[in-house]
Image 1 (cartoon, rainbow, N blue to C red):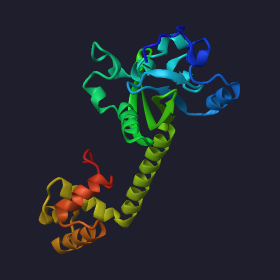
Image 2: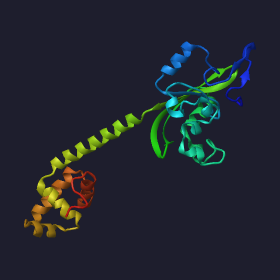
Image 3: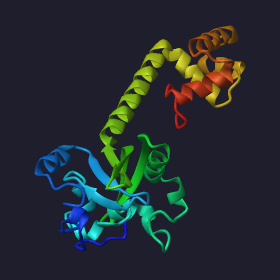
Image 4: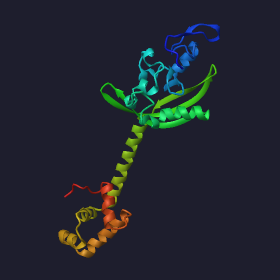
Length: 246
């Protein structure tokens, strides 16, 4: 794995130039299939050095093949951790927990495909982009050497949709719960939040203590709370009342 880009070798009695474009595939048909895969696809060695990549992956590594050929993956895609240690990608403390490196190592060790999910932070000019990736590493042998086919699927849009859906569900649940409480019950909750006693609330709202306790009982039942303090906590969590309310 120490060949440099542009160095000549002679496999099977023929000479060729080792470049990312012809080290593994010389067939245009196979190349077109490889490039048609919508995910970021790489061929890497055990140190996650890039030996080959498809057209989609150029979105991450750029168009200049010589710049990234035989670079470790984190350096090629500009992972923020790749510069944390003098030796580069794979040598910092964060790299020990790298899901991509771990998936490649596991695939080569177990001799079967390995899949994992991760979030990576990539330097893009002066900003840092968060990308969520589904990582697949699968081992294969080529000319008696073992490599890994590494596929990175950008699932950031799926995560964004799921977060939006969860927020919508939470807002809907809060609205439904709010609908269960009457205006008087929410008003009593706000006074309970301020630490007022049953007697205090009865004086403020000019109703009997018995009526206040009746409302508090209904509130506890509706919110499935253990007591009035727990009911206030649930109401705050669900947005039925707010800390800043007076």
